[in-house]
Amino acid sequence: MQTLDVMLSLNLLTPRQHAEIRAWTARARTPEKIMEMPPHLWRALELASVLMDFDGELEQTC
Image 1 (tube, rainbow, N blue to C red):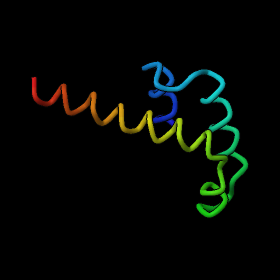
Image 2 (image 1 turned 45 degrees about the horizontal axis):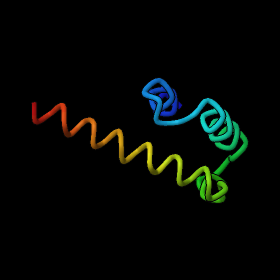
Image 3 (image 1 turned 30 degrees about the vertical axis):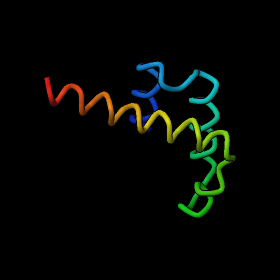
């Protein structure tokens, strides 16, 4: 969950997306259930992940 909090602090997720993803993962008891997360939440999470990696790569090259 720490990664979700970082994504929120970097404004890569909206507070609503953060809350919805956190709630979904808290209810899901297995990886299979997490994989059933609604597509709009997956897209938000994937985009935030890509942007975090991109930001990290920029910091490493500087």
